[in-house]
Image 1: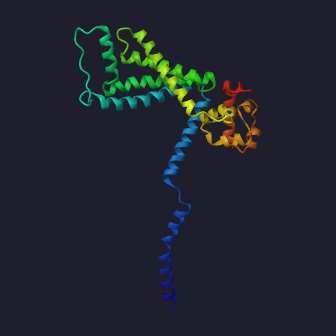
Image 2 (image 1 turned 120 degrees about the vertical axis):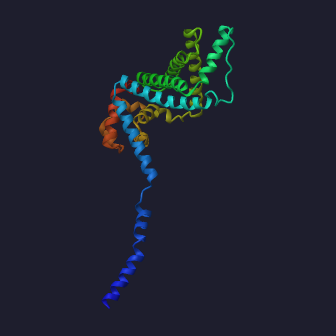
Image 3 (image 1 turned 30 degrees about the horizontal axis):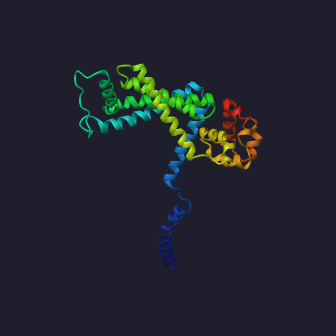
Length: 270
């Protein structure tokens, strides 16, 4: 009887054991995609926090390098699609007796339809310069505005013209005109973006706060600021106790107070 009872218990265990891990997976199992996304966000937040603590020249150098890598990858991809033999609209060679205006137009077309390496170089210079200048302007002005955006666009456009050879035969003049064109386009896009994403009257009191939290990778604590009515006017007055009252953890509190101390634009919000 003991053996029969043991076999019966074993059979019951075999029937029930597969459902145990399944039930655990359904109840407590985590989504690998969510875990990966969370890790990426944590790394990004840590990188932003580290960048916020660095001097302006370090942040500008890192931003320039990151922008250059991204632009180089994009330019290489575009160049592989428009390289000789791969472009549906090949560029004809100019005649030997072409005047300076025709040669300048040819150079402009060639700069936008060159091979992968040339395109990677051109776009790396353009996006790297834009990212670096934007970083410097943001640190100096304390916020992202149209003036900083247009300045970055002008610098990136001028460098793109010089490096790509679009400026032949007047490199300085063409660099200036290209920079102005980039600045005008960037300013127009900036104004259009502001128009379509115009915040409500209440949100205008939290613009600096939102920008600071986004820079630190702490966007999720914006609701804590709103609950405690900690708006842009209160930024220079913030203390550890005030942030603790709105239930912001110690780590983010230290980052926020350090950023307010470092950023003159936030102090001027008073």
